Length: 111
Image (tube, rainbow, N blue to C red):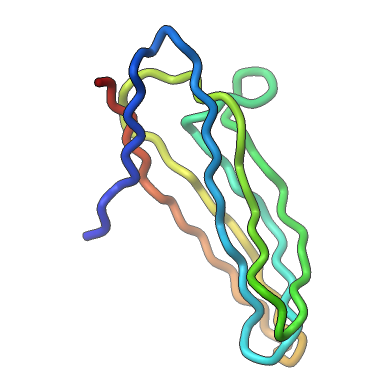
């Protein structure tokens, strides 16, 4: 079983900024387009909802991976949260896109 990412904060009284990055790669020797969203339940976005970042990026073959980041203030208390990815990958030489969803556990603790 995968271990969660642990973020240890000194105090829940003092806001902390976090950055989480996901690296998207081209598939083999084909242009790959990713569309979807990254959302972080440990960060608050507009109207108090979990922070969300839309993804719409095309990566050419032979290029370095492209980082998609979620960044901002973490204003939650200790507990279990998630970085959620919902992406559709369209590969130029394949007519069938691949959809994937991943929830990466994040545990917030205090020192």
